[in-house]
Image (cartoon, rainbow, N blue to C red):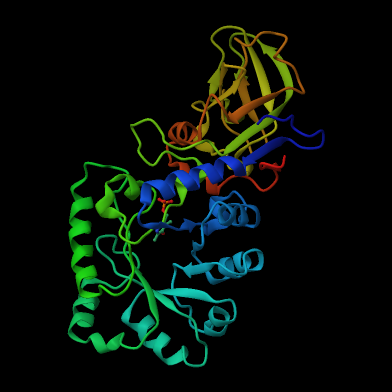
Length: 368
Ligand SMILES: *Cc1c(COP(=O)(O)O)cnc(C)c1O
């Protein structure tokens, strides 16, 4: 899946839609007999909603989750017929948009439920219901849930097509929170047995069949991150990121590299400067700790990451490869998004959603 960085660009981001579709099918198999939705919030985790949405629909996804109504409106413009849920709720004043674009609000509080009851007559659209079981973030609190159990008429007659909760610690398979949340959610399901239930995100899908209920909601694993950290990844890599070498220079022992002179050479070194930096989502936290790759050779980051530039130690690279105009991989066969995230002290979600807007983007599918 490799191509050269185009002549006018600093870096090339290649997004493999076929790998994305394979990942969807793999997760759908894992979820079965539950159905498998796709979470495409934040521009499909930075990979491009307009391309990712249709590719997932082609692979069989027919239920999508976004965070915001505007994201849903954009998804609707490329996918007129799929089911779309808006996780962040039912925004006051936007009721007509939910109905016009058929965006199902996920109701997150008793207040949301009440407002939905009042608005839905004039602005008809089905809805979902989020019940908090341990995140303390969105969804009906425990107190609200108890109130709802005492007054089930609050949701009587409403067109609720889904209820859901969200796991706090699913990527840690041994965390006791997983089972605690499962038990709480089972009680909810027992009270609302008619409504399809959904609990598992990407990692939740790998906690066992009990977690899948009727609908799974994977996001990050679709895009190639490992949902089972510490174990071999079941996912295909979806992104490759290659950056052009702008200059190569030799420095003497004692010379420093970059802002703040945070790296000083202890022996003569060869430095390759590439056309990507923190403005492209390569976090400044990668300074002196990140790595790039070329044909199996590792090139450690030297000094600080700049806005548009990163300096690499190319001392071990054969001189024929250490040339301006060649490209190095930040993400590719030698380094996946999980590894780069670890080097940056963050999670793959943040690497993906920060992928720069000025990368030249190339989408690969079965027709290319
Ligand atoms: C983002 C999100 C997901 C997807 O989570 P991943 O860990 O990316 O699979 C599922 N459900 C909710 C409520 C979310 O906010």
